[in-house]
Amino acid sequence: MGRIPKDALPLYMPRNHVNGLLAVLDLIIHADEKNEMAISAQKLKDKILRYGKAFQSNGEDCISVLLFQNEILPLLKILLLIVSVKVEAVRDYYPIIEHKKKG
Image (cartoon, rainbow, N blue to C red):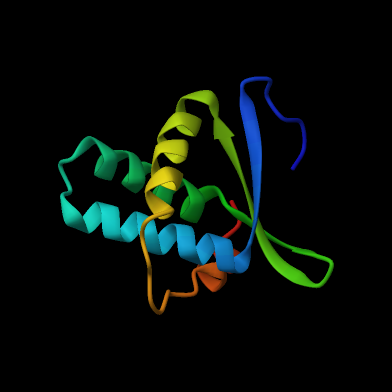
């Protein structure tokens, strides 16, 4: 990932966690697009899809993304919501992140 800025945190997630997180972000976004939580969810989803890097760790598909301090609190709030949400079939976002154009 290279040099990490001091105000950033690298986030590493296995494929199924990325898919689950993005599925929950979609639920939040579509519930009320003008809600503050939905706006934060959209920004986080866009960041993961745009800047996420696919890699393998011990034979497992994973994603890494660099989050800055101002992005961590909204993520924590969203993660707290996930605890009470049951999501059925989730979309596999890994191929989108893995095959995006380098540039």
